[in-house]
Each structure stands twice: as C-alpha cells, then as structure tokens.
Image (cartoon, rainbow, N blue to C red; front, side, top):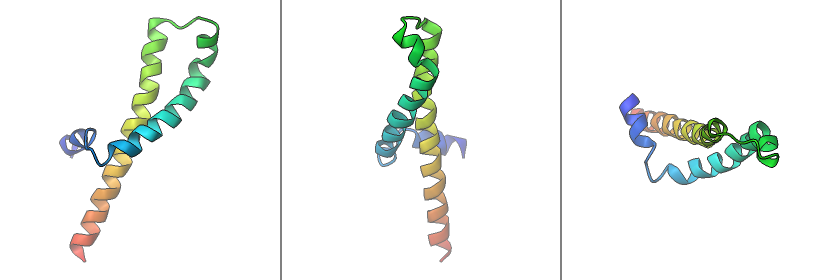
Length: 80
C-alpha cells in the first residue's frame, strides 16, 4: 500500500488538484507561520526549509485523500 501511495504522488491525474490545494493551503500556512519573519527580513535557512515543507505537506495530504477516495470507489464498483 505504501508503494502505491508513493507512486500516486506523481500520478498525472491527481497532481492538478494536489497542486491547487498545496498552493492555497500552503500559502495560508506560510503566511501564518512565516509571514512576519519574511516581512521583517528574518528568514533563516531553517525557516525556508520549514516554508518549503509548508507546501509539500498539503500536497501529500491531498494526494492521499484522492488515492484513498479512488481506491474506495474502485473497490465499491468492482463489488457491484
């Protein structure tokens, strides 16, 4: 199951939605967590790494949700 999920991270049919979620949610979280540091010039390399993760995590969560949803949908339709 983990291997399938990792492969789904690069699935073309899942990526557009995941990118939109990552851009919106990531930007919101980046602003909350790092906005003041960015505005005041206090961004360190550690903060930039954290800022990058702020976008990667919503992407991965979106892919996971789509992956689980499609897997459940397929399982349901195969049983019917």
